[in-house]
Amino acid sequence: MRNGTSALRAVLATAMATLLTTAPLAQAATWPVIHPRVHSYFDLSTGQQPENIVALPGEEVELSFAGSRQVARIRPDGSLTLRGTLPLPPDGGTSTPVLGTAIATGLVHMGNGDSYVGYAAGSPTHTGIWRIRDGAPPVRIAALPAASFPNGMAADENGKTLFVADSALGVIWRIPLSGNAPTKWLDAPELKPSGFLGANGLRVHQGSLWVTNMDHGTLVRIPFQRGGTAGVPEIRASGLDGIDDFAFVGRSQTVVAALNGANQVALVDPDGTHQVVLTAADGLTGPTSVAIHGSTLWVTSAAFVIQRDPNLLKARIVARG
Figure 1: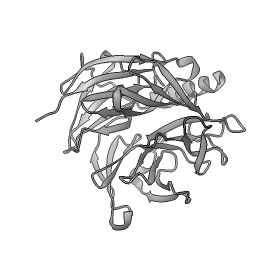
Figure 2: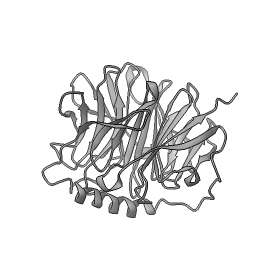
Figure 3: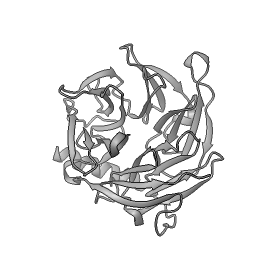
Figure 4: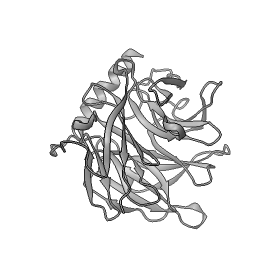
């Protein structure tokens, strides 16, 4: 595990460095985000680099750890419970696209307690979507091509289908939880990478699928057509350097986004403008994902570039009226 996590840190540090910007830092959290603090620190040496997050009731969260290929639950007191570890592929993950090391990625938690996590492993026997269930080993429920890089993921409004952003192939996969084979839901230029990672964070919200493109620095909206097919992609915001995952503020179309390359979190308004609301001054060390539950804002930092203090930050987001 230690060799794999070292390789992950080296590859990501080099690649992400090309996305770094020199934007001025805010001195502290900016309204409407208030009272930020680091809730939990993680162990960089063992690959505890939080890649994705789901906020749960009772001030709990569930995380995917990229380098250690794990899914874990974090309690309100900061204690950690491991839910599952994904197995290494036969070559140890060296064939994984872009990175050359296997990582756990996007995360979805269902009402029945099951979780689903993406696995980029460069292997026809391992790459895809895995189910995490208490009391049972992880099980791959959907195989994706070895050349794919499953990343951000969300369930549809009925909880019967997963949509997965593929950062390497630049497509969105549709995966029925009934057991049917995955299909390409959308293959479009707005999703393609241009040197590192393309389609990244993904959410289903108000009749549309929303996805970020890390290389392009964009937030893209794709409406669902009748029958569930993809409509025409529309770029809703740009200039979001190194954008990773994101979350919507309530039922609005305002977004809180992790800007990994800039080491910032931004509030993106429906008109596409954005303001920085969190920076390194608040504890960020390379934000990867965002979750909102009520007025609580959670941000994970994986420290892929900074190489210190991967953490989980907690803040409050104030309703704007």
